[in-house]
Length: 543
Image 1 (cartoon, one colour):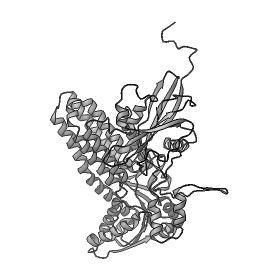
Image 2 (image 1 turned 90 degrees about the horizontal axis):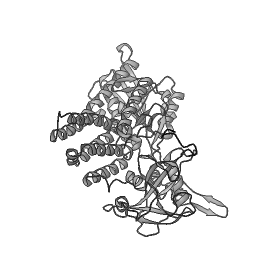
Image 3 (image 1 turned 180 degrees about the horizontal axis):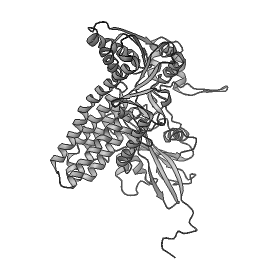
């Protein structure tokens, strides 16, 4: 019998996809956190008496792995979004455990307790799957090489993928990356273009600390910088991460060419280091030129669509839902350069942060500084409440949207309120054009680092504070309901306040995509998405 002939009595390998959720507690911003690990009871079928995070299978009813992680956390600890925040997502990995003939695909996650506790008894109540639990120093867990701490298989691999601070070298680079991720994640004022520029600067800062590693171990350095790029995309601000992903992939593409030159002897040593930094500086500088191309393309679109045969136009009415500086500057550029007498811009307020009011104010300021002296120009800015989207849509010529992501499968992800605005325009002004103004960095690809199913949940306090400031009397009752579940003999009640920033507008509802390459159709977007998928897989698949 040939040696490779399979054993007919060997059962097929069972495959399971599971979540692995680590709970971190931060007591002092200047000190490392501790992580909770749980002793598995003898009632569980796999790995009893081993330390583990909160883990469980991803069910068919779970929309995403992150949804499964939240479900398992609540079932096994009673913790939920009122006591935890999602901190980081780790890159999934697969391994075979021959002792139980099972292949595991692990989806690691990290969560932070929202109210740091200095006691030893925070609100964690374990179920039958665990006998006890305790806080551990994650650095000790990751650097322990013997079996003095018995853990479930590959626990250290899972932990390292969400907590790199102890293992990523050099330590200065790890600290820079950690601080950078916090900055990106908490930035709720910058648009995706600004966030991408910030991410590129953070990536450059990270690389500056890795110079010795590049000179001594270039292959290890290449893996390290790709890992840093992955985290900046995934664990910065994922909802706005498509632009960051495109920008960083473009940088990695050029760095890969530099490393190839070094292997052939074309360049070496410090010259390689200088070329890497020059690539980053070039990409940062070139971003301004791309924004100008988008503005020019929009002016050309308005000229072609609304100024037939070079004729002037008495009045153009534009509705927008965006805090995008690109949209603001594109409107002003087009108005300044085209023969339009009166421009009426209607802006939805965009709760809860009221970015619409900021955009309206910047339009007025921009007009006064740039366009006011142009003869015959008359700007009218009207701000509408979000609830008045249908009223604002009546009689418009153009609905202008930005994009935080463009997906061939899901559509255009933009500020919440975009879809009601589109639907209102389709009903109230069916002849109006729905236009997405965006550069091509916003295009995402299937199976990329940025998950199109990811939904960013933000602090409910942003919504509640607006009610409180307006003196809404019902706020007290709602806040009591948010603090915890109320249970009595008659039943139970609980209040959730949802603060969702982004929503999808299907591609078929958009009349035109205006970019730095002009007006694109769905086919061109799909082509660019497929090209991007190949590049993303090449740089991140093996991490």
